Length: 348
Image (cartoon, rainbow, N blue to C red; front, top):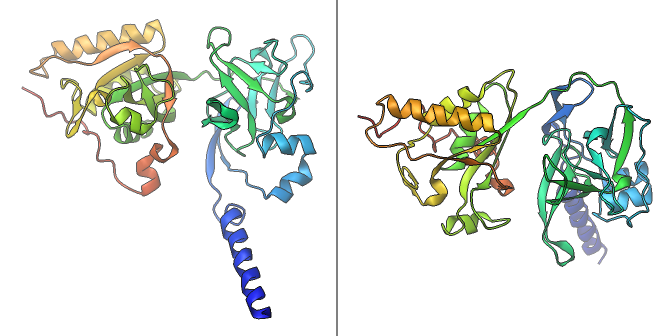
């Protein structure tokens, strides 16, 4: 009996060690890109992992309940520190100190929780679907330590229309001297299988972040299975965050035209369906103007015998794809196969 008990203890110990604590003992911590408000630069930092006991040592019981157990503080119960008038500052993650929201983006939502209309950078947060409490919501987590922060809703003020509804205990206020904050731009492209499209744009210097997802349709919060049925109207899309001081929008358009055949309708190679159609999603009137001119220039160049069918439409809701689709080729150590590198089959 004693030998049996010892075996059980050993098995439980191994499960605890390798099932829940792998990250802690990893010799090569995962790296994440985080935007630093104080320097105005994107930095490569170690992902933060701690055991439950370690988190409990640095958190109050309420902080632990909210950030690690995904709890929610009672409305109007939290105190979100406010700076003095015109005093610059940033609200950081209470768990790892990652910059999350500038003071200038905070607004009064009358909900009882601190509300912001924009994060300092989408690099610093993660959004994932939350189906708890009988609702389907978009949960906001810290990108570096995975702390639960709150949820984001589509009922905020302009210019984003977003309301990042945060738990006050998940935030800490820090006074900072802000440099000229680097403003990154967004755009999005659909050009067939999004694995290959993401791989192509990720290679470009000045592209800060790439995310694969679904856009252009009407179904809210679609899954990959939904989109594959070709009934949602969504296209497999790659959303980019880029530094215009390093790479121009025109350069991104050049890459877009090179990596797919823009003359085929609802098809790229063996991939057939409206989810594989060619689309440029513009975020500003200037992007629209440049994209239209680029398309016209390419069409009139005589490079293709058939008309270019690429849609140029305003960017609407973008739904991030499942995690296993993100950086697919990098995760699996494969060379991109889904895009045409500087080659198009439909030429004269």
